[in-house]
Length: 457
Image (cartoon, rainbow, N blue to C red; front, side, top):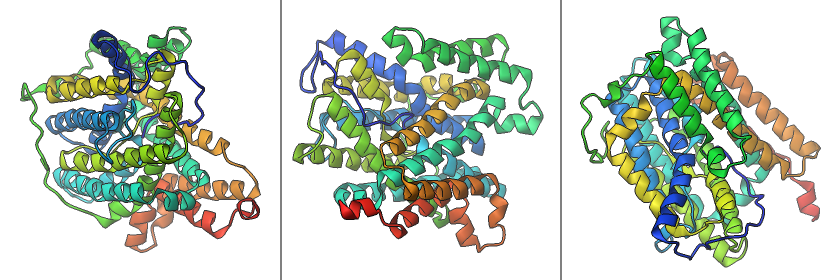
């Protein structure tokens, strides 16, 4: 998932509209600004999952490289549009944060049960491939799905995703699971690195310079990287035996599947599809394009379809599901450049960076406390996105009851998984994810407690 999601976008005085073609140097610098805003969020989900599950440095490098390549392919299709594929706007797509928590929880359980990490990754990518067809199907029946999964359900699930990810962020700030194992968790050095990055991000967002604010996370990580180098904390093992040029290798880990891992992800795939509607609509509005009617409907169908197809490619080429990013709307708004030709430049940059493993190796060398300071901002932004979605709904007694019960059960199961110790294993595998528990609860209550205001409208 992208760190921010909002359909409330102010009108922008565009310098270049969607169909304008800026000069190459203008397109390059506009694309570079977008790249600075997205490169860290694209690789972070894969890095967190790999670190949590104990994936080897070499395989982590492969996964991160493919995250960049697959994001570039999706961005190209979204911007260029081919038939029913893509929205035909300046839309950037990257690895989604929505799936981080459930994949870490499910994968860690498999590792704990003695499953080899390579088999765990094969299972995860099998689930990613299967789930992609949910998004592809949703793109064909959007009106029906939107009646079932309302903004109340979507906002609750997104809020849950953000809140359950906070634990992952705090663990990263303390040094990660490896630090828990060697006794260095929450050491003074780890907290110095993570808190320094967090403070720098906050301070940079006070500077009234557009490119500084949009690149705040990259700049903060660069400072944290330098501090880690001074402390002798950089680990370049990901570059060992790395090829100069990375040829995409399909199904590197093989292919497997687990219903216990797949079923909790269904709700997340549905919500991710509907989030794409809001993000494409926001881009449409800021690009001064229609936000209703047949043209708009064609755009959101194409956007959600690419969401699904690209997640299919992601599973085949050993990386994680992708989603439309929303933070790039802020870059469009600040620069006034909405040309979809810039999206093609961004796509080219991402693919090129992904094909050279040295890039992923350098990013992989970031110590987890440094990354933790940045992901706390990203994960908090995910939760804030959920609040933003809920703020656009009518929070009457019915809505508050649905939110209260869904958050209570979802967070409760996430923090106290022992609650499910005596239920059948199949049920435990499904409800073991707090996001799945809360999401299913929100879906069922939204159906069971009909919205009277809609019935009388």
